[in-house]
Image 1 (cartoon, rainbow, N blue to C red):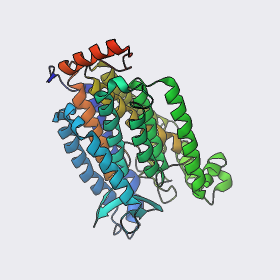
Image 2 (image 1 turned 90 degrees about the horizontal axis):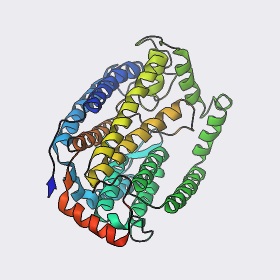
Image 3 (image 1 turned 135 degrees about the vertical axis):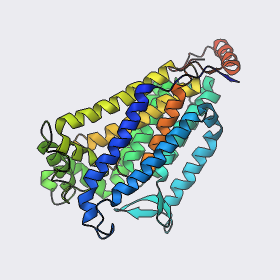
Length: 395
C-alpha cells in the first residue's frame, strides 16, 4: 500500500514549465511566419504554424495537468506494455507504405492529416521500463545476467530501431538509460562495458549512412561544405553571431527569411539568439538549468524508490535533449535532428514533453511517499544478501 502526505507541486518547476511553453508558442510565431507566408503548402498563411502550435500547446497543458493528478506509482502497471508498444510502433515506421517520410527522414506514423512520432513515446516508455524493472527486481540490478541485462536489451532494441532514422533521439534515449542504470546501482564495470559497446554501435550507424559522414565533415569545416551539408550550420552560426548581446529585436531577424532551414524547429535556438541576443539565449539556458536542477532535487528528495528513479530518468531525458539541440546549433557537435523541448515546433514533441513534466510534478507532490510493506521486505532481503543500496534508494 502506498502511503504519504500530498504537498503542493514544485513551484519553480511549475512556473518554468509554463514559461517555456508560452515562450515556445511566441517564438514559433516569430520564427515561422516568413516561411509560412511564402509557402503554397500553408496556403501562404503566415500564421499557419502558429495556430497549430497554439492548439498543441493547449493539448500539452491539458496533458500536463492530467499527469499531475494521476498517481505516478500506477504508471508501473504499464512498464511492459509500454516497451512492447514502442517496439511495434517503431517497427511500423520502417515498413514501406506505413511509415511517413518528411524531409528525407522516415520517423512518423499517421492517418490523414494527423501524424505521430513514435520515438517520442519510446523515450518515455524506456524511462518507465527501467524505473519499474529496477523497482521490481532491485536486489538483482547489480547482477550482470539476471538484473542488468533486461533493461539493457530493451535499450538496445529500442535504440537500434530509432537510430535507423533518428540518431539524435537514439543518443538521447541511450544516455538516459545509462544514467538511470547508474542511479539504480549497477556496477561500474558493467556501465563501462555498455558505454564502449554503445559508442561502437553509434559509429556503426554513422558509417551505415553516407549523409551522416558528410555531416561530420561539414561540422569540421562548415564553410568548406557551404553548398552542401554545411549550409545549415553556417547560417545557424550567422544568426547567433549577428544577434550580439541584445539581439536585433523581435520579428527583425534576417536568417529566418528562407536562409536558415528549420528555423522554427531544430534551429529555433538560433532565431532566439539572433533576435534576443546573448541575453535571450542565456535566459533560455537558465530556464533549462532550473528545470534540470529542480528535477534532480525532486529525485533526491522523494522517499519512493520508483518515483526517485522515474524523476531522475525524466529529468535526464529532458536535459539531454535540450543540451543536444543547443550543442548542435552552436556547432559543438555534428548536426542531428533533435527538437528543443517546449520551444521547437511540433505536436508529438510538445505533448510528450508536457507528459514527462506532468509526471515529474506529480512525483514532487509526494516527497514522503513510500510503499512501506514492500520497502521493509526489500531492506531485510538486501541486508541478508549483502547488496548495497542503490544511489537513489530511499527504501
